[in-house]
Every structure is written in C-alpha cells, then in structure tokens.
Amino acid sequence: MFTKGYTKKRSKKDNSPRNPGWFQAGKPSGRSRSQTSIQIPESASASTSCVRQTFQSSDCKIETTGNICTLRSQADADLKREENKALHSGMRWIDSQLTLSLKSGELAGMYTLKCITCGFIGDRIKMYKEIATGKPGPNPGQPNVALASALQDCPIGNTTVQQLLAGMDTPTPCRSSMQRTSSRVAAEMVKLNKTDMAQKLELVKEDNRKRGVPENEINITVDARYNSNTIVSKKKPGQNATQAFALGIETMTDKKYIIAAVVQNKMCWKGAWLRGKGFPIECPGHEECTANLYRAAALSEYKLGKEIGNQLGLQKCLVRYVTTDGDGRSARGIEDALTALEPMWKVERLADDVHLGQSEFRASLRA
Ligand SMILES: [Zn+2]
Ligand SMILES: [Zn+2]
Image (cartoon, rainbow, N blue to C red; front, top):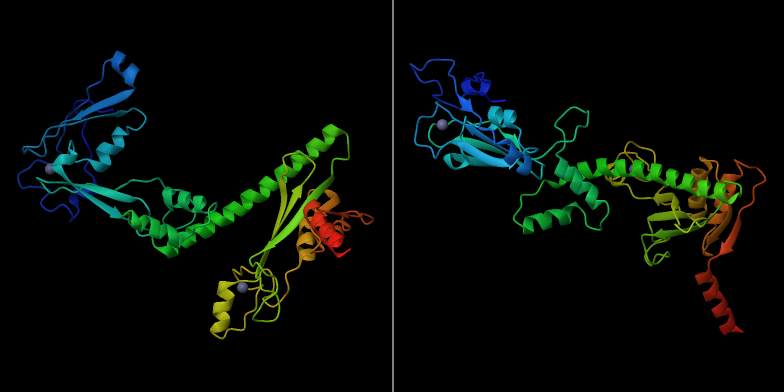
C-alpha cells in the first residue's frame, strides 16, 4: 500500500485555522513524503499474522523519537486510514499530545493527536463504531446501544448506570439521550419478542404434528401479575395497581415456551404532564401515549385473556385447556377471543395445583 515515492494529497485540514503556520514561506508546495514499508518475512508473518509499518516523514525535521513502528494484528491494521486521518506522517504517540473528547451523550470518546514540535493537529478519530439508523442526524454509538439493550434485561435503569459509571470516574452520557436510546432499543426489543413468540408457537405446532394430534389445538397456563402487592388500595377507591402483565405459557412441550404476553398500563407520563398544564388530553389516545387503559379503569384479567386469545388467534391456534388460579376470568377471555375464529369453540379452565391444594387445605380446616 505504501511504497516509496507515495505522495499524499494535501487535505483540507492542512489549510485550516487549527494549524497556523502550517505553510511556511519558502517551502515548496506539494511536499512529498516517503514512506517505506518493511514487510515482515513471509515465515514470520505466517506465524504471527502481524503487520509492521514504518513511516518516514521529511516534514517535521526535529528530534522526534523516531519513526512509527508498531506491531499489531493484521485484522486491526487499517494503514490507509491511519495514515490519512490520524497521523502526522510518522508522528508517534510520545511525540504528540493526546486529546480525548466526548461527544455529548456518548459513552466512548474521540481522540486527536497534536504534534508537540510543529503544532499540527490531526483529525478526530472515533474510538467506537456507529450504528446506522438511516435517519438524519448523528448515528448512535455502538457502546450506548449495547448498554441500553443490556439494561433491558436487568432491574437497574439509566440513572443507576450513571451512578455506576461516575463511581468508576467514567464520564457518563446525559440521561435524556440515554432515555432516547433506551426507548428506541425497547421498541426493537418488543418487535424481536413478538417474532420470537410466533416462532415458538410454530415449534409447538411442529410437536403436535409429530404426535399426530390436531396441530393448532394447544393447552396453556395463564397468570397475571400487578405492580402492587395488594390489589385493594388503602388510600383511595379503586385498585392499587397501575400495571398488569399476563403471560400465556404452552404446556404441550416440556420447554414451556412463552407464546403470548400482554400488558395493561394506566400510566402515561406525557398525558399526566399535559393534563397538569391544562390541556384537555385523555389517555389512551394521544400521540406517544404509553397507557393502553384509562387511568380510572379497572385492570381486568378477562381482557388480558382476551388479548392472549387474539394473539394466538393470529396464528390460527385454538386453546383447549387453560390452567389458571381462581382469581380471574382469563380463561373466559380467551374463549371469547377464540369464538371469533371458531364459533362453537369451548375453552375449559383447569385449576392449578398450588391454588387448588391451598383451597382444599382451607376447606378441610373448616370442616
Ligand atoms: Zn510535527
Ligand atoms: Zn397518555
């Protein structure tokens, strides 16, 4: 790539005000730099797969510590880019001033090299990869997106991550941009999960086919959980919980795949904020509303069950037995959803053994 007599094109940067006095009077233009590359003998490179490159510059005729001679793996070496972007023709790290800068809202930073002797400032080099969004504006850095997706699977949030990073003396991204990244990643995660559940349901159908039973008749267990440990509020009328989350889990295979997930949410930050400002806005229904249930409405396991039935109905799946605890009408909800698919379809509820055992125990105490 770099052979003797290689002439570097003058870049725009050379004229920039960041590099004052770059063109010295009397200096001939079209300076040529000679770089010679020393190829490691075939036998050596075969064993280490490393590249060794020497740049020799005639620009900076001062006592530098010498020419660049770095040894790194072949895969990491992007010599063309290094020469064009970062290096002042053979500028060594110890001959230069390293400036690290953080783009606002990024976890990883960028660096620039400034020659100690002549003051040349190289381009800013990113220390991270970017993820192309196809949208206008800067692309998000890969570490930020990776962090946001890792946070999806753990109970801490962006504020705690800031505290963690600050505790390690690491500059943290601002919370608003972390929140933006989190929202984007979360939306992707929902999509991924939906396709995953659909694939899992196809696996269950495959199992049914192998057994020689009707492939679209399955049995599931359903339960809902709330963001409160008491469903009755001590302070105000209505339920204490604002969110309910229900899962449909198949009991056909021993894998117990989750094949349906439904959430009911009464909370909407934006709606509450706008109502507080006096705007006549109701949730759900406005732009970017996070709620899917009116704030005074009751959470309903019947409706959760109905939504589970709708999700399974999309793949023409019929539920025969639903194993649930006795505190909801989710089985009835599933049946009502599935009758749209099969008008005479009946869903039967089975009692789960934990609740059944407890109620029988209590009944025996009363006897
Ligand atoms: Zn220099
Ligand atoms: Zn809302």
